[in-house]
Image (cartoon, rainbow, N blue to C red; front, side, top):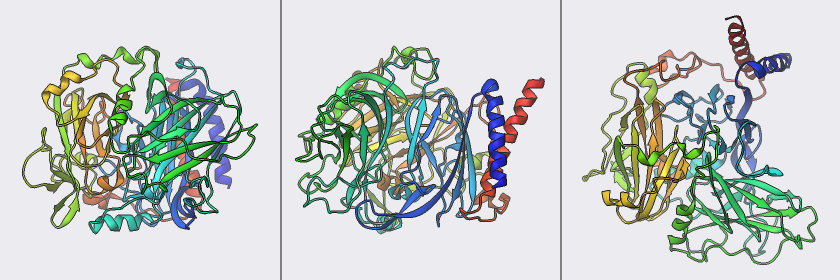
Length: 591
């Protein structure tokens, strides 16, 4: 405890100094462990952070330096990835297998990154081995700096909601099902903030399940940040009798528009302004229900929470608010997505307008069409593919292999267009160059909605439509106010086109956010190299605490495993970072 008290004292001293000298620091100390919870009425093992499920919301501001010490108290390797945080020129902190060695059980590792020039609503989660299906996720709220105006009045409160499909099976059992070539099947329910449904129907919802209740004041306006952190199910989100005024998605302010409901696909994040303008004759339902399924069979796969005014006159009762009436027709959902446009006249992380970067007038350097097909069999195993390639994660992280001049870890032969012929399993990555401008077309020839995410970047969603993408499809592109985000849906039998500027060297993961298809191989990486700068020039130097594995495992010094009851390692980590910061500030002062 003395060590922790010292750390706190140093934090206060450093904070006072830093307030005048550099961008602020935010420190987090996390113990990632299993706890027993019963979100759907059955006890099961879930992944918690500091005993919280879901994990805590990281509340920071543009340009904050974020230091997160992670103790792995699980029984398997762990990483944490930061969905939507761009890690400018610093892929070492991305927390995926292409850039980081996993944290062994009983070890701790410290992430250290900056939320440079970003605002918005994001989330973190453990990306390995289907672990997100057991929890370990939490929110990241990046607030505007005070000097930057926001394109709406300051809300009276800020509320984070995690919605997602959920299985009663533990994640190792789900993993084994996929390894055995089986489908995961229909989920057992949908959770809202880690809790099961309100008992709106006695025959569908058993007694004794804890539900989420959001307490509000009449007449006030709240910002709801909603994240779909589930396994594979698109969800329709709605609040009974209330409009959802969409204002931001994944770091971009949107043109404000009202929805009665909105489809939120796996891995996506939206924020809405919701005004408490009803008469509070009773509580109101908050609903997240499965989309594009047989609703008569999936009725129980519905998340239900409660919005409760302080002057509410009674409990919610009666039927849930209706979902869209297009059970299988996805046209309504696509039109919703197309209607979301970027607010080009407002600033975001910087005062200059979001639309000042005219992406539609930039010459495209490279074009890649990434095609998804139904699962295939490769070497007797069920696998998923992008452009005929099922990604095989190497034992040595790709960026670490490059740093250490280790060859043969990956190949640079990912095709620009899908290849015909038998599917293959290999570690093939997209090869590109710093400051290139990419056009990527995601073609979904499967029967389910897939969402695709690119680490390290926000991309402009310039078009989506049904059918096979061709060069003539560019005539439908939105080249002015397409929304900039990091995760986009691709409907079955359809395509979505995005554009991105490669302004950050490193290795960056391209993946589906649907956990089952991701686990089975649907991902790759973009290798972004600066031929004129190189390592340590345009890219941030590798961290001193880097873990080693694979071909470089002999370089790793042993770390004595320690349990969550040991506080010394966390305090020592905090002290080390604070001391380093203070030394650097003093050096600046005397220059």
